[in-house]
Amino acid sequence: LPSDTERELRAATLRFFVWCFQGYDKYVAVIGADGRLPESLFDRAGFVKQADHLKNDTQAQAALDKLTASQMFDRFVQDIVTEPDRCEVKFFNESIVQKLNRSKTRKALPTPFLDDRSDCLAETFTPPPPSNWGLPEGNTYCYASRFPTSFDKSAFGTVRPPATLIKSAELVRVATAQSMLNKTMV
Image (tube, rainbow, N blue to C red; front, side, top):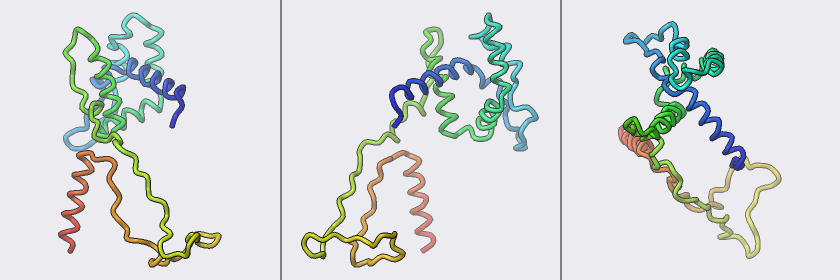
């Protein structure tokens, strides 16, 4: 797990990018009805010129112009246009919405991705220790000095299905689809 300093640095970096790019979504191109990407995915000049939070700061506008001209930003926009449902994209967009929701002059918008707790781990599974069942008293079962190429099935008990730690709607949907697929293949 990251240290407290690393967490603080990540949080500060996120706050910086959220502040810089608030309102960027109005300048991102949309994929055409024919499925083609437009020539330019982002109206950089329009965004920098209209950035309300930078109106009176020419140095900040120049820095934002350079940042939006970077390969990193091009990749960011490409991800947003081609994969808008990616978790990283949803997280960033809703982080901007969450920041803007703190304003008293605007109506708060929902942030369902940030508010969703279905993927939070509620428990930690600790596997049981290896069984010595069937072995002489005080002995343990082990293979020689290398990883085995075959297993003696009699040395193992019945395998039980693992508990699902994450119980999100997406996992339920995938499990249901897999179950239906398995039934049709039989």
